[in-house]
Length: 87
Image: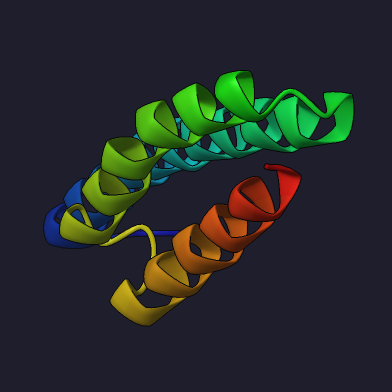
């Protein structure tokens, strides 16, 4: 348990950051799931649209420090490859 005032403040800040990051990660996963579902349905147009919507959200996660740059690039690349293969 945090005893000093600064440790209490750090605990509050950590909780706030945790909540924000968790929400952002969840939002990214939702966009990724939409792309996955569109790919599974076999509709290339819907999959491409879902991927276009997901890309900025994934990269925003990178700028906010939720996800590593290479991880995001890898996810986008693999999804784009799968969407392209539908055509």
